[in-house]
Length: 174
Figure (cartoon, rainbow, N blue to C red):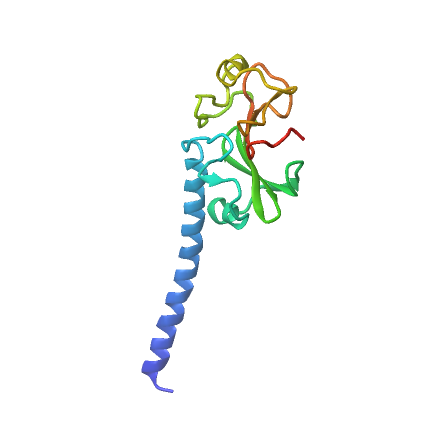
């Protein structure tokens, strides 16, 4: 084996070693940016939020947002993947049958972080009275609007909106 081929092989190996961590870093940086962008993308009643859509392949969630902080059972699917997208704000993707079944934003602190809005202008931290004002009186207990494909404060009552959940239109409350 010649010195030149050894040197060429060494340079190629060094380049590969440098490239692999850079690729992993760029994925992490991209996923962090996508998590931050979840705060500015609109919420579509019955459609999606944070740039994700109901019905999309579940692998898209981890491709876009990375590995979740927690994975737990879901009442709206098989599993819920949870991501802390900002201080005081958690994004949840409910997965079932290999697809996104529901998407939610949850305020996790005393004062919700900035939040995207629904088409009717409701964001985390908005007074609950504004939900009824813009969506009408809900047909069931709580703030579950099956015909619109959206629910608010599914975790329990509050004076302000603490969670927004997007589900397919016509989905009954669990």
